Amino acid sequence: MKGRFRNRRNLLRMGAALGAAACLRNGAALAADAAAATGTAASAAKGASHAALSIGLLRNPVSGLIAVTDQKGWFKAAGLDLTSVLFSGAGGPKVLQAMGGGAVGIGSVSVTAALLALAANAIPLRIVSISTDPAPVFALLAAPEIDSIPKLAGKRVATTAGTGLHYFLARALGKFGMRLADVEFLNLPVGDAQAAFLAKRVDAVVPSLTGRYYIQSLRKDTRQLFTYDDFAKPPGPTTRFDDYDVFVAPQAVVEGNGVALRTFLTAYHDKGVRYLRDAATQEAAIADVTRYVNAEQKSPTDESAMRQQLLKSRFFDVREARDILASDAFRAGLEDQVRFFVDTKQIPASIPVDATIARGLLAS
Image (cartoon, rainbow, N blue to C red; front, side, top):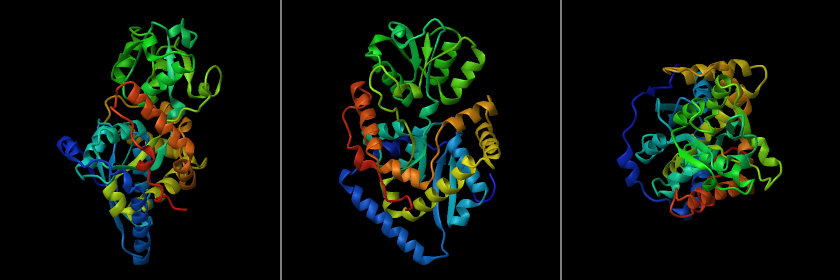
């Protein structure tokens, strides 16, 4: 990467530190928000001094957009010195482990990963913004002879347990009065689940975001059995399906480095996201993000698949992200997902989700 965006490419071994991290302090939510606001005001008074922040990155579109934002100089221009830690080939749990050890101050993970970390009392973690909404890309794909959800009864359905994909499957079944017990659920890593479907060893799959387009390009008879848009249609409840990716930070960073967090979020949402959403720069942004995601990859993602994923996912400016965090629907979505993970024994007990949301870091 160019400029000050310094990648440390080794995976951090922070598992032990994660287990030792302090439990979430539920009563500190308001105090943390006030501390962040106070810190922001103090930094503004200083003027020329730059804030500093470290971020954990993956090889995914959100990280690609962050990298592009830095390459364009937009973090620097906003007064932020950003350092990156690249977790090449890893996932959200590794970023959370690094947070537990103090190696990074912010990262983007699925809300599922954040909730599971909170439920494990692993890190005193706060949700500080919405990085993207990939839920519109989610889909349940099936063999051509399966033309309705009820026909999945007794069939082999694969995806990865304890993920948003797993939650999507349960919600899709629930619209038709079915439960996971009504199908033969196979808990497989998502790549293995996709390979099993392509080899016709399973009858249906909830694939990864790019996996959806990869499967449909290779197995032409694939039936798109259920998608995000189907949640708004009868039968059953028409409650929207939410499974955001979120920016998270340790509570200590929210309290002690709110200035840097706020500067980062403002530049990401109002510069990086605008670059992707603006019709005049959108194609260049998609190409930039695709190059980032494919760097060092043995199986590069096709740019057309990346374009579909980026355009179907939702990205938000500061005002939109702030409104989502403040909404009853966001809180209700978190609570519903927590209930699902309690019911499926992924977590032992519920958590007070409202106390995990830091709403004071997005500029008004």
